Length: 330
Image 1: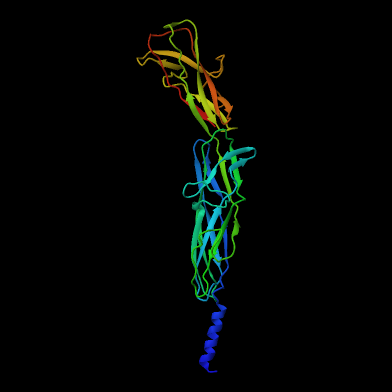
Image 2: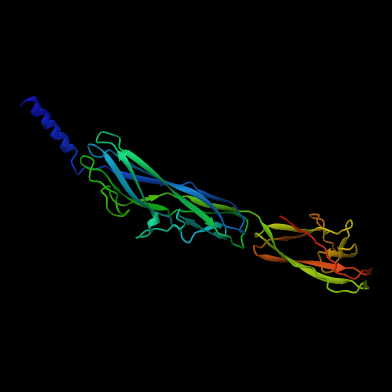
């Protein structure tokens, strides 16, 4: 046998090692940082994002290498989704970049939860190749009432994914994108990927002044021989267990600490505001001295303001008014 014949035999042996039926093994892994929603107090929607990172690796494939194609499905479990703080719960949901809700594991996944990637792998004597994609996830917490302050969280232990790979065979050809994450391709069987992450939100203390009704004393005689009493209602909404204190200033027409209404022509009528129905506890704006205190319930709370126009007074006929500012500290 001459030298040419020996080389030909060796080359044929090499072809046999890289038979068209040999292909690489593709493995994928996934991870996602925790999602932390900051600044949520229940009054408006709040959101935060994370990115799932999917990395796929393939070892050396055919003699000449080629392109690996992977079709991947991602699911996120735990539905309906709620964040917990002891016995208190906070509803929320997770959304795709298309604005649709992430679904749990399903035989027919929505199209927006199917992702593809491709990457090059080397030939028979190389170290293979790898590819990576990032998939955004958005957590949204809608506005809701009845909340308690504190940290709410949920660990999504059922998060998983599935993929199918299509890898080059023979001389690096004969490969295409698998049409499904559950079938097709030549890169092994459907595989599940578990990657837990946590969604959390710290519900901050918050108080809102919903409404404040006018304190109208009505029509009274110019010469006041008896006290005239009326009330007003201030409605607050504070997160559950939030300690609050409400104060009232002296109005825009006060003389020192004496509250006054004016007709706009230099005439005044004195009046006063109180924290109690007996009208013995003057209502001011110094915290812990002449303010009133309460604890939020997460729902609206009405706070009564007791007003009085004291007698005797002799006032010029006309329409009198004043503007008082309500301040809530918490």
